[in-house]
Length: 262
Length: 301
Image (cartoon, rainbow over all chains, first blue to last red; front, top):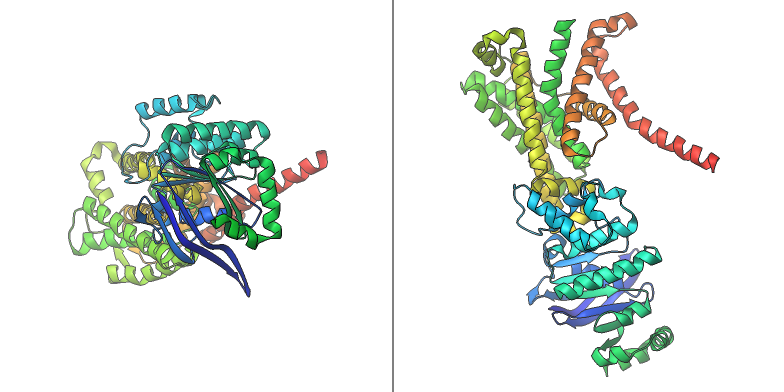
């Protein structure tokens, strides 16, 4: 489904060179749900940005669904790959209504001069929003800027999954919300992913969440993958173990790198 | 007085189409497009020369004027999105290029339409029973048709994508839309409308002049801002209506200022200064109001 082949990304600012991604090899099968943890500056966000096409890699190839997309622009890649970031303001058009935002999200290519919202589409939208249990189905004609952060992020999740992408990239998409909404949006996201069976990569700072969700877990440090757990191994892992790895990776990077590959 | 108001209403309508064009770039796309000062004249030049030199019928010259304006908008779009020139400079460059092109189209600095059958004259002749109001009624029908078409366009899939491009560019990229394409579409439609307005103004006033586009951006902005401050709806139908109402109010104010302004020592030549100052005030007031509000909040808390 997704293959990263020795993907490197180096940021150059003046004389300083920062290696954000140091040659990442990664392969996800269709339906995989990968959670990614790691300290600040580990390269997690850069990884998602490179996959989404927002940042080009310095070296390496990216394939989605068997197609090499390394040179494909972000908006074209977005037709198969959805991304949600931390800031709830990023995923929606503020001065447009909920219905208009949903209408934009329901189609990722082949836009034409045809009416975007008819009565049938409106009732479909209301139906879909009702499942959120937030009362948004009664506010279809409200501009999105009137919604709270939690409501906006819930709408963003709906919009991201509406066109059934092959790949979903979540960049700490619950981190900017209050605790009640964190749980709600996490539950919602999980339901959508499981219902639609979308291949997903989720960055999180919450180790419990990283363990609870998905079938694969990866820890990054300084642009490298320092540990990669799947299946049974991931199910048995505990927060304590992760913390141990986490601290260990800061002390002895090289040892862990060796450990990872065997 | 009635004659003044009739005149003001006609002008408000005919320049209202240009204001709708400015609305698309300034409000919808958040793209300050100065191409309009040139494309307005391009519309007038095309609609006049084709009528005088080539004997086209008055309706098709308007369609061709629209297309010529759209092409001008595309040039700005290419300069900005493909060649990476900043939005303001891209518009200025096209505007200056158009000055030469407009002179080429007309073959001389101005064309008189006094001795040919213009669109407005043809209308006046075909509905004689409307008398003096015939042009006003005709312009109202044209302008309302343009407004409704534009509203429909903004409700299509492409129209929604265009609006979202100005609202949140990152969001629209994430939904598979190329914002560069959307800017091109917006600039084309906008300058098409501005050129159509220019063509209608030429037919309505009986001449085209290479300098007639000066300040189109400012008068367009004046209409957009006046209308937007009166009608604060975010619904597209109300927004386009507010632009036309803003244009009518602006033109009425101009007419009254030209007629009675001498009392306060106002000359016709002061018009552009006053209009620009009006736009400056309209742009600055919300910012100052916001700063005052914050200060009040800070004091009370």
